[in-house]
Image (cartoon, rainbow, N blue to C red; front, side, top):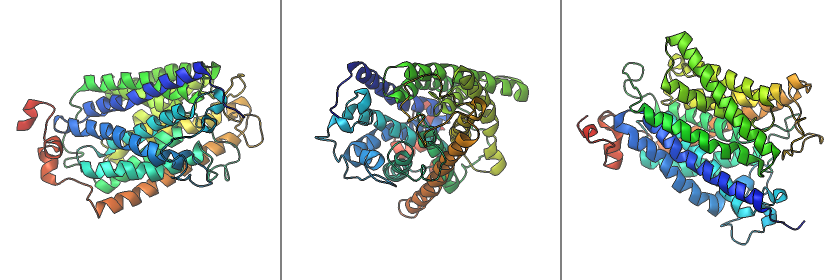
Length: 427
Protein backbone atom coordinates (compact mmCIF):
# COMPACT_ATOMS: atom_id res chain seq x y z
CA UNK A 1 0.00 0.00 0.00
CA UNK A 2 1.57 3.37 -0.98
CA UNK A 3 2.40 5.80 1.83
CA UNK A 4 0.33 8.98 2.02
CA UNK A 5 1.60 11.79 4.22
CA UNK A 6 -0.82 13.22 6.80
CA UNK A 7 0.66 16.60 7.70
CA UNK A 8 -1.58 17.09 10.76
CA UNK A 9 -0.64 13.76 12.33
CA UNK A 10 3.00 14.31 11.43
CA UNK A 11 3.04 17.76 13.03
CA UNK A 12 1.53 16.31 16.21
CA UNK A 13 4.14 13.52 16.32
CA UNK A 14 7.04 15.96 15.84
CA UNK A 15 5.60 18.05 18.67
CA UNK A 16 5.15 14.96 20.86
CA UNK A 17 8.73 13.91 20.22
CA UNK A 18 9.98 17.30 21.39
CA UNK A 19 7.79 17.07 24.50
CA UNK A 20 9.13 13.63 25.41
CA UNK A 21 12.71 14.76 24.79
CA UNK A 22 12.14 17.53 27.36
CA UNK A 23 11.26 14.87 29.94
CA UNK A 24 14.87 13.71 30.33
CA UNK A 25 16.24 17.15 31.35
CA UNK A 26 13.11 17.45 33.52
CA UNK A 27 14.02 14.14 35.15
CA UNK A 28 17.52 15.51 35.75
CA UNK A 29 16.03 18.38 37.78
CA UNK A 30 13.60 16.05 39.57
CA UNK A 31 16.36 13.64 40.58
CA UNK A 32 18.98 16.36 41.06
CA UNK A 33 16.88 18.15 43.64
CA UNK A 34 16.30 14.95 45.59
CA UNK A 35 19.98 14.17 46.27
CA UNK A 36 22.45 15.87 48.57
CA UNK A 37 24.46 18.93 47.55
CA UNK A 38 27.64 16.97 46.92
CA UNK A 39 26.14 14.70 44.24
CA UNK A 40 23.62 16.85 42.35
CA UNK A 41 25.74 17.29 39.21
CA UNK A 42 26.53 13.59 38.96
CA UNK A 43 22.85 12.79 39.31
CA UNK A 44 21.90 15.22 36.58
CA UNK A 45 24.75 14.08 34.33
CA UNK A 46 23.47 10.50 34.43
CA UNK A 47 20.31 11.70 32.71
CA UNK A 48 22.08 14.03 30.30
CA UNK A 49 24.65 11.47 29.15
CA UNK A 50 21.79 9.08 28.36
CA UNK A 51 20.62 11.62 25.79
CA UNK A 52 23.97 11.22 24.07
CA UNK A 53 24.60 7.49 24.20
CA UNK A 54 21.09 6.27 23.45
CA UNK A 55 20.38 8.74 20.65
CA UNK A 56 23.54 7.65 18.81
CA UNK A 57 23.13 3.88 19.10
CA UNK A 58 19.40 4.12 18.41
CA UNK A 59 19.87 5.49 14.91
CA UNK A 60 22.80 3.19 14.13
CA UNK A 61 21.39 -0.20 15.15
CA UNK A 62 19.18 -0.25 18.29
CA UNK A 63 15.97 0.76 16.51
CA UNK A 64 16.33 -2.34 14.35
CA UNK A 65 16.79 -4.49 17.46
CA UNK A 66 13.57 -3.15 18.97
CA UNK A 67 11.36 -2.83 15.90
CA UNK A 68 13.01 -4.83 13.15
CA UNK A 69 11.72 -8.22 12.03
CA UNK A 70 12.17 -11.22 14.33
CA UNK A 71 10.27 -13.41 16.78
CA UNK A 72 12.28 -12.91 20.00
CA UNK A 73 14.26 -9.79 19.10
CA UNK A 74 14.89 -7.73 15.99
CA UNK A 75 18.08 -7.44 14.00
CA UNK A 76 20.81 -4.77 14.33
CA UNK A 77 21.13 -4.89 10.56
CA UNK A 78 17.48 -4.04 10.04
CA UNK A 79 17.26 -0.32 9.23
CA UNK A 80 21.00 0.04 9.95
CA UNK A 81 21.78 3.76 9.86
CA UNK A 82 18.20 4.50 8.76
CA UNK A 83 19.18 5.75 5.31
CA UNK A 84 16.97 4.92 2.35
CA UNK A 85 14.15 3.33 4.38
CA UNK A 86 10.72 3.75 2.82
CA UNK A 87 8.05 5.58 4.83
CA UNK A 88 5.84 2.52 4.46
CA UNK A 89 8.06 0.97 7.19
CA UNK A 90 6.89 3.55 9.72
CA UNK A 91 5.17 2.19 12.81
CA UNK A 92 2.48 4.78 12.06
CA UNK A 93 2.36 4.44 8.28
CA UNK A 94 -1.42 3.99 8.46
CA UNK A 95 -1.60 7.39 10.18
CA UNK A 96 0.51 9.05 7.48
CA UNK A 97 3.51 9.63 9.76
CA UNK A 98 6.94 9.24 8.08
CA UNK A 99 9.44 6.59 9.13
CA UNK A 100 12.09 8.96 10.48
CA UNK A 101 9.57 10.82 12.63
CA UNK A 102 8.58 7.56 14.29
CA UNK A 103 12.23 6.59 14.79
CA UNK A 104 12.80 9.87 16.62
CA UNK A 105 9.66 9.38 18.72
CA UNK A 106 10.75 5.91 19.81
CA UNK A 107 14.29 7.17 20.47
CA UNK A 108 13.19 9.61 23.16
CA UNK A 109 11.28 6.81 24.90
CA UNK A 110 14.42 4.70 25.04
CA UNK A 111 16.45 7.65 26.35
CA UNK A 112 14.24 8.40 29.33
CA UNK A 113 13.78 4.73 30.21
CA UNK A 114 17.46 4.19 30.92
CA UNK A 115 17.72 7.60 32.61
CA UNK A 116 14.99 6.57 35.06
CA UNK A 117 17.19 3.75 36.37
CA UNK A 118 19.82 6.20 37.61
CA UNK A 119 17.62 7.30 40.50
CA UNK A 120 18.27 4.05 42.36
CA UNK A 121 22.07 4.36 42.31
CA UNK A 122 22.61 7.93 43.49
CA UNK A 123 25.92 8.85 45.17
CA UNK A 124 27.78 5.63 44.47
CA UNK A 125 28.12 4.36 40.88
CA UNK A 126 31.14 5.11 38.72
CA UNK A 127 30.17 7.49 35.96
CA UNK A 128 32.20 5.70 33.27
CA UNK A 129 30.54 2.40 34.16
CA UNK A 130 27.13 4.08 33.96
CA UNK A 131 27.91 5.34 30.46
CA UNK A 132 28.76 1.82 29.28
CA UNK A 133 25.71 0.44 31.09
CA UNK A 134 23.36 2.73 29.15
CA UNK A 135 24.63 1.38 25.83
CA UNK A 136 24.55 -2.29 26.84
CA UNK A 137 21.18 -2.10 28.59
CA UNK A 138 19.36 -0.38 25.73
CA UNK A 139 20.91 -2.80 23.23
CA UNK A 140 19.77 -5.86 25.16
CA UNK A 141 17.10 -5.41 27.82
CA UNK A 142 15.16 -2.47 26.41
CA UNK A 143 15.31 -3.78 22.86
CA UNK A 144 14.03 -7.21 23.95
CA UNK A 145 11.12 -5.90 26.02
CA UNK A 146 10.10 -3.26 23.46
CA UNK A 147 10.24 -5.79 20.64
CA UNK A 148 7.90 -8.17 22.44
CA UNK A 149 5.44 -5.57 23.74
CA UNK A 150 5.34 -3.05 20.89
CA UNK A 151 7.17 -4.74 18.03
CA UNK A 152 6.74 -8.02 16.19
CA UNK A 153 8.06 -10.22 19.02
CA UNK A 154 5.99 -13.22 20.04
CA UNK A 155 7.35 -14.16 23.49
CA UNK A 156 4.40 -12.54 25.30
CA UNK A 157 1.59 -13.03 22.80
CA UNK A 158 2.38 -16.74 22.58
CA UNK A 159 1.48 -17.23 26.25
CA UNK A 160 -1.04 -14.44 26.99
CA UNK A 161 -4.72 -15.29 26.35
CA UNK A 162 -5.38 -11.88 24.74
CA UNK A 163 -3.39 -8.89 23.50
CA UNK A 164 -1.82 -7.14 26.50
CA UNK A 165 -2.39 -3.40 26.57
CA UNK A 166 0.57 -1.08 27.06
CA UNK A 167 -0.43 2.08 25.29
CA UNK A 168 2.55 4.25 26.18
CA UNK A 169 5.05 2.31 28.28
CA UNK A 170 3.82 0.83 31.57
CA UNK A 171 5.80 -2.34 30.91
CA UNK A 172 8.37 -1.19 28.34
CA UNK A 173 9.37 1.96 30.24
CA UNK A 174 8.36 1.91 33.89
CA UNK A 175 8.29 -1.73 34.97
CA UNK A 176 11.36 -2.33 32.83
CA UNK A 177 13.29 0.57 34.40
CA UNK A 178 12.02 -0.18 37.90
CA UNK A 179 13.09 -3.84 37.84
CA UNK A 180 16.50 -2.84 36.48
CA UNK A 181 16.81 -0.18 39.19
CA UNK A 182 16.15 -2.80 41.86
CA UNK A 183 18.79 -5.11 40.41
CA UNK A 184 21.45 -2.37 40.33
CA UNK A 185 20.58 -1.14 43.82
CA UNK A 186 21.08 -4.66 45.19
CA UNK A 187 24.38 -5.11 43.32
CA UNK A 188 25.78 -1.76 44.42
CA UNK A 189 24.75 -2.10 48.03
CA UNK A 190 23.60 0.63 50.37
CA UNK A 191 25.04 4.11 50.61
CA UNK A 192 27.29 4.81 53.56
CA UNK A 193 25.00 5.90 56.37
CA UNK A 194 21.81 4.59 54.75
CA UNK A 195 19.10 4.30 57.40
CA UNK A 196 21.31 6.06 59.98
CA UNK A 197 22.09 9.49 58.55
CA UNK A 198 19.56 11.97 57.13
CA UNK A 199 19.75 12.05 53.32
CA UNK A 200 17.26 14.79 52.64
CA UNK A 201 16.65 16.43 49.25
CA UNK A 202 18.89 19.46 48.90
CA UNK A 203 16.59 21.51 46.64
CA UNK A 204 12.86 20.92 46.75
CA UNK A 205 12.10 23.68 44.21
CA UNK A 206 14.22 21.68 41.72
CA UNK A 207 12.07 18.63 42.51
CA UNK A 208 8.82 20.50 41.94
CA UNK A 209 10.14 22.13 38.75
CA UNK A 210 11.19 18.70 37.48
CA UNK A 211 7.78 17.22 38.28
CA UNK A 212 6.01 20.09 36.50
CA UNK A 213 8.16 19.70 33.37
CA UNK A 214 7.71 15.93 33.46
CA UNK A 215 3.94 16.38 33.54
CA UNK A 216 4.13 18.82 30.63
CA UNK A 217 6.27 16.45 28.56
CA UNK A 218 4.10 13.48 29.48
CA UNK A 219 1.30 14.77 27.26
CA UNK A 220 3.54 13.95 24.31
CA UNK A 221 4.46 10.65 25.94
CA UNK A 222 0.86 9.47 26.30
CA UNK A 223 -1.23 11.38 23.76
CA UNK A 224 1.56 11.04 21.19
CA UNK A 225 1.44 7.26 21.50
CA UNK A 226 -1.78 7.23 19.49
CA UNK A 227 0.42 8.24 16.49
CA UNK A 228 -2.25 10.67 15.31
CA UNK A 229 -4.19 13.79 16.29
CA UNK A 230 -7.60 12.24 16.88
CA UNK A 231 -10.18 11.43 19.53
CA UNK A 232 -8.05 8.70 21.09
CA UNK A 233 -5.17 11.14 21.54
CA UNK A 234 -7.68 13.47 23.18
CA UNK A 235 -8.76 10.72 25.57
CA UNK A 236 -5.12 9.98 26.45
CA UNK A 237 -4.48 13.71 26.94
CA UNK A 238 -7.41 14.09 29.33
CA UNK A 239 -6.51 10.98 31.31
CA UNK A 240 -2.93 12.28 31.62
CA UNK A 241 -4.40 15.37 33.27
CA UNK A 242 -6.77 13.81 35.76
CA UNK A 243 -4.97 10.65 36.91
CA UNK A 244 -1.82 12.40 38.23
CA UNK A 245 -3.98 15.15 39.72
CA UNK A 246 -5.88 12.60 41.82
CA UNK A 247 -2.67 10.67 42.58
CA UNK A 248 -1.10 13.82 44.02
CA UNK A 249 -4.13 14.34 46.26
CA UNK A 250 -4.20 10.73 47.48
CA UNK A 251 -0.42 10.74 48.12
CA UNK A 252 -0.53 13.86 50.30
CA UNK A 253 -3.62 12.45 52.03
CA UNK A 254 -1.54 9.43 53.05
CA UNK A 255 1.17 11.80 54.30
CA UNK A 256 -1.35 13.85 56.28
CA UNK A 257 -2.80 10.75 57.95
CA UNK A 258 0.55 9.01 58.50
CA UNK A 259 2.92 11.92 59.21
CA UNK A 260 0.67 14.82 60.09
CA UNK A 261 1.78 17.08 57.22
CA UNK A 262 1.50 17.00 53.42
CA UNK A 263 4.87 17.76 51.80
CA UNK A 264 6.04 19.30 48.54
CA UNK A 265 8.14 16.19 47.90
CA UNK A 266 5.04 14.07 48.37
CA UNK A 267 3.01 16.24 45.98
CA UNK A 268 5.70 15.99 43.30
CA UNK A 269 6.10 12.25 43.84
CA UNK A 270 2.35 11.73 43.70
CA UNK A 271 2.16 13.49 40.35
CA UNK A 272 4.84 11.20 38.94
CA UNK A 273 3.20 8.10 40.42
CA UNK A 274 -0.08 9.01 38.74
CA UNK A 275 1.66 9.68 35.44
CA UNK A 276 3.41 6.31 35.63
CA UNK A 277 0.21 4.42 36.41
CA UNK A 278 -1.93 6.01 33.71
CA UNK A 279 0.74 5.55 31.02
CA UNK A 280 -0.19 1.98 29.96
CA UNK A 281 -3.91 2.71 30.31
CA UNK A 282 -4.11 6.22 28.86
CA UNK A 283 -6.30 5.35 25.87
CA UNK A 284 -8.11 2.28 27.18
CA UNK A 285 -9.93 3.60 30.25
CA UNK A 286 -12.69 6.14 30.58
CA UNK A 287 -12.81 9.09 32.97
CA UNK A 288 -13.84 7.01 35.99
CA UNK A 289 -11.15 4.46 35.26
CA UNK A 290 -8.49 7.16 35.01
CA UNK A 291 -9.58 8.70 38.31
CA UNK A 292 -9.56 5.29 40.00
CA UNK A 293 -6.10 4.46 38.68
CA UNK A 294 -4.72 7.80 39.85
CA UNK A 295 -6.26 7.52 43.31
CA UNK A 296 -5.06 3.96 43.85
CA UNK A 297 -1.57 4.64 42.48
CA UNK A 298 -1.05 7.61 44.79
CA UNK A 299 -1.89 5.55 47.87
CA UNK A 300 -0.02 2.39 46.89
CA UNK A 301 3.15 4.18 45.77
CA UNK A 302 3.18 6.42 48.87
CA UNK A 303 3.19 3.25 50.97
CA UNK A 304 5.56 1.32 48.69
CA UNK A 305 8.50 3.72 49.08
CA UNK A 306 8.93 2.38 52.61
CA UNK A 307 9.67 -1.13 51.32
CA UNK A 308 13.37 -0.30 50.92
CA UNK A 309 13.71 0.13 54.67
CA UNK A 310 11.85 -3.08 55.38
CA UNK A 311 13.87 -5.19 52.94
CA UNK A 312 17.17 -3.32 53.21
CA UNK A 313 17.87 -2.33 49.60
CA UNK A 314 18.90 1.27 48.93
CA UNK A 315 16.70 2.55 46.13
CA UNK A 316 17.99 6.08 46.61
CA UNK A 317 15.26 8.10 44.87
CA UNK A 318 12.39 5.56 44.99
CA UNK A 319 12.50 4.30 41.41
CA UNK A 320 11.19 0.95 42.65
CA UNK A 321 8.44 2.44 44.80
CA UNK A 322 7.20 4.84 42.12
CA UNK A 323 8.07 3.40 38.71
CA UNK A 324 8.10 -0.36 39.30
CA UNK A 325 5.14 -0.37 41.67
CA UNK A 326 3.30 2.37 39.78
CA UNK A 327 3.86 0.58 36.49
CA UNK A 328 2.54 -2.66 37.93
CA UNK A 329 -0.50 -0.90 39.40
CA UNK A 330 -1.38 0.79 36.12
CA UNK A 331 -0.76 -2.31 34.04
CA UNK A 332 -2.86 -4.58 36.24
CA UNK A 333 -5.72 -2.14 36.75
CA UNK A 334 -6.29 -2.18 32.99
CA UNK A 335 -7.62 -5.66 33.64
CA UNK A 336 -10.36 -4.10 35.76
CA UNK A 337 -11.04 -0.75 34.09
CA UNK A 338 -10.37 -1.20 30.37
CA UNK A 339 -13.31 0.24 28.43
CA UNK A 340 -12.76 -0.26 24.71
CA UNK A 341 -16.32 0.62 23.70
CA UNK A 342 -16.03 4.41 23.39
CA UNK A 343 -15.65 4.33 19.59
CA UNK A 344 -12.10 5.66 19.46
CA UNK A 345 -9.72 4.90 16.61
CA UNK A 346 -7.22 3.29 18.92
CA UNK A 347 -4.34 1.57 17.11
CA UNK A 348 -4.75 -1.83 18.77
CA UNK A 349 -6.49 -4.58 16.85
CA UNK A 350 -9.61 -4.38 18.97
CA UNK A 351 -12.36 -6.93 18.36
CA UNK A 352 -10.29 -9.40 16.35
CA UNK A 353 -9.38 -12.84 17.72
CA UNK A 354 -6.58 -12.48 20.25
CA UNK A 355 -7.09 -8.73 20.52
CA UNK A 356 -7.50 -6.88 23.83
CA UNK A 357 -10.74 -7.13 25.79
CA UNK A 358 -12.68 -4.98 28.21
CA UNK A 359 -11.72 -5.19 31.87
CA UNK A 360 -13.53 -7.12 34.56
CA UNK A 361 -15.69 -4.15 35.61
CA UNK A 362 -16.75 -3.53 32.00
CA UNK A 363 -17.96 -7.01 31.16
CA UNK A 364 -14.76 -8.55 29.85
CA UNK A 365 -14.16 -11.11 32.57
CA UNK A 366 -10.74 -12.06 33.91
CA UNK A 367 -9.01 -12.63 30.58
CA UNK A 368 -7.50 -9.17 30.11
CA UNK A 369 -6.24 -9.09 33.68
CA UNK A 370 -4.43 -12.38 33.07
CA UNK A 371 -2.84 -10.93 29.95
CA UNK A 372 -1.79 -7.78 31.78
CA UNK A 373 -0.20 -9.85 34.54
CA UNK A 374 1.63 -11.92 31.93
CA UNK A 375 3.14 -8.83 30.31
CA UNK A 376 4.10 -7.31 33.66
CA UNK A 377 5.70 -10.56 34.82
CA UNK A 378 7.64 -10.87 31.57
CA UNK A 379 9.07 -7.37 31.91
CA UNK A 380 9.98 -7.86 35.58
CA UNK A 381 11.77 -11.17 35.11
CA UNK A 382 13.60 -10.25 31.90
CA UNK A 383 14.72 -6.84 33.14
CA UNK A 384 15.76 -7.92 36.64
CA UNK A 385 17.69 -11.02 35.58
CA UNK A 386 19.34 -9.45 32.53
CA UNK A 387 20.33 -6.33 34.48
CA UNK A 388 21.89 -8.49 37.19
CA UNK A 389 23.98 -10.24 34.55
CA UNK A 390 25.04 -6.95 32.93
CA UNK A 391 25.83 -5.46 36.33
CA UNK A 392 27.94 -8.43 37.41
CA UNK A 393 29.95 -8.32 34.18
CA UNK A 394 30.61 -4.60 34.64
CA UNK A 395 31.43 -5.08 38.32
CA UNK A 396 34.21 -7.55 37.57
CA UNK A 397 35.55 -5.66 34.56
CA UNK A 398 35.18 -1.89 35.08
CA UNK A 399 33.96 -1.84 38.67
CA UNK A 400 30.54 -0.54 39.73
CA UNK A 401 31.04 1.53 42.84
CA UNK A 402 33.20 4.52 43.69
CA UNK A 403 35.50 4.29 46.70
CA UNK A 404 34.24 5.12 50.17
CA UNK A 405 36.36 8.25 50.29
CA UNK A 406 34.81 9.51 47.05
CA UNK A 407 31.33 8.79 48.33
CA UNK A 408 32.01 10.66 51.57
CA UNK A 409 33.78 13.66 50.03
CA UNK A 410 31.37 14.00 47.13
CA UNK A 411 30.99 12.23 43.81
CA UNK A 412 30.60 15.51 41.90
CA UNK A 413 34.12 16.70 42.59
CA UNK A 414 35.73 13.26 42.21
CA UNK A 415 33.96 12.17 39.01
CA UNK A 416 33.44 15.51 37.26
CA UNK A 417 35.90 17.95 38.81
CA UNK A 418 33.21 20.48 39.68
CA UNK A 419 30.50 21.22 42.20
CA UNK A 420 27.04 22.69 41.87
CA UNK A 421 27.65 25.22 44.63
CA UNK A 422 30.88 26.84 45.81
CA UNK A 423 30.24 25.93 49.43
CA UNK A 424 30.06 22.24 48.45
CA UNK A 425 33.82 22.24 47.92
CA UNK A 426 34.34 22.55 51.64
CA UNK A 427 31.88 19.83 52.66
